[in-house]
Length: 426
Image (cartoon, rainbow, N blue to C red; front, top):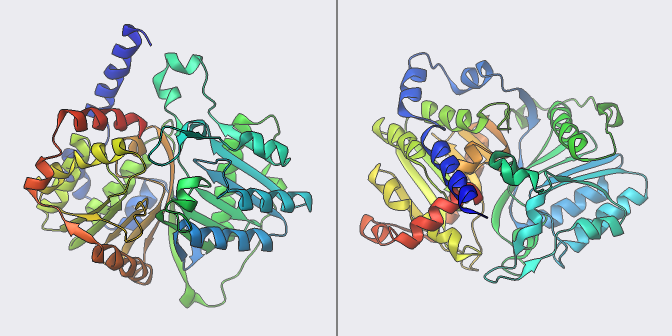
């Protein structure tokens, strides 16, 4: 890469860092006519759907078992969108189960981001092979999201347009959304456990149809095979027990359509009045993202972040730890989670006031707010919040509070360099 491209690259970083995302001014203006989170999201144009209460899976191992069971039960169609999909002993059973279903006549389609070509084994520089060749051998139908090309090198936003979403749709009715990839670290790091993460599974024909449209739009952009919504007939499900249902807003972020992740976190900033939990594997913060946390703490809200030790690469941990002092200076509390099994906490969950909940793929970082495709569900439901807070309690049990003196030790030049790089790469 020549000097001109390097200069252009860092100029773009600078422009995005200082002229995007949320500012306190935005929030103060929004707060003047803010009613509630449902009204806020509805007025922004985000759709809502009746769903069953989510069943949550918190490890790669538990989700692998659940996904294999859902694959086995599928009779008509399976759609899979994974940010990272690799060919590994930990993923073979899932790919084979999908291939068997496809061979039996079930419609199976897969989306995998091109980032899968650059996945190292944990704590090494050895790359794990992306799943594309293996999927071809299995005769599975798939599309590679935004394949890397020479033309993208001359337009950095196109190069950095990555599909970070992780979701499944089974039989046009059952939907899974969360943070678990079909890759070696999500499913099997540490061995026989996988990351500490989340996938939430619900039933909702309307939500399934909405996400199926999203899948088809993306798939058709990168595949020679054209899919139609009519390929996946609508299933008219009824909820006989209204006590077991709730309402979810779907937040689908695409940088060309607006800043949906900004709206997502603004909704929580404006809604929360008492306590906010932000569970993030790592967080690479900009001044604007720090300002939002300052806005929340200035309201008198107790803000808690849970970050993670045991990252698969040292650069991620250095980049994330660089921001801890900034969080503490806002008045937030920062916990550092250390899994007894040394699993990495890859989860992206927010819970506010024991009622507001979001889970999905969106990190509290610059990339999720801008160039990454993201998908989250949002609920205002004390029952769902209670489930997630119970799990958060187990995280806190294995965490330590960080203090400002400890956090300042990470304000090094080396950590800063990694922090800047991870703004757009991590």
